[in-house]
Length: 131
Image (cartoon, rainbow, N blue to C red; front, side, top):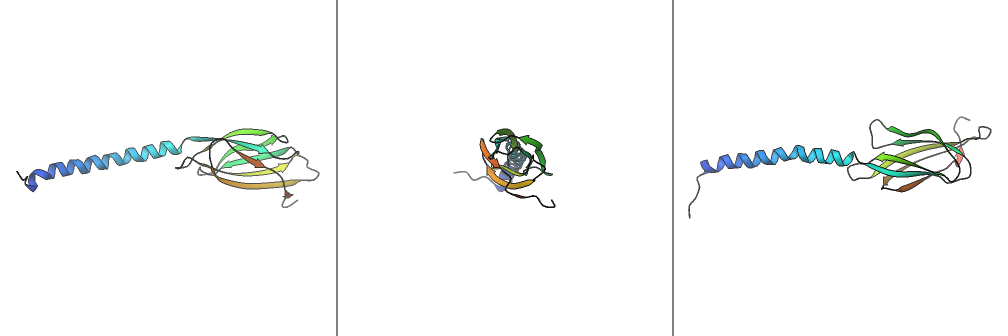
């Protein structure tokens, strides 16, 4: 059995370390690429009143607006795409106000761990602050 001297092993040890270190940026790039995938969702007005709805993507910094004061008729769904996090799930926040300005009603909510094709029900269930 022949035994290699430590001098002969050093170049190979450095090569293994260099190869390992060179893979790390590729893994980070792959993780970033996965995080940039979109999650298709539906925003659903679960009542009879028409609403103005704003939806924010909470996986982006700063938060991005997915719907900006968009009118959604009663029992209608609107498709949106939100940014996936590292686990492939979306997180959104929403606000809503009914269209009838004579008796304003508001609602808001936050949903996380949203998978593809999930439906988020929006509604107005309280008095609007400051009105």
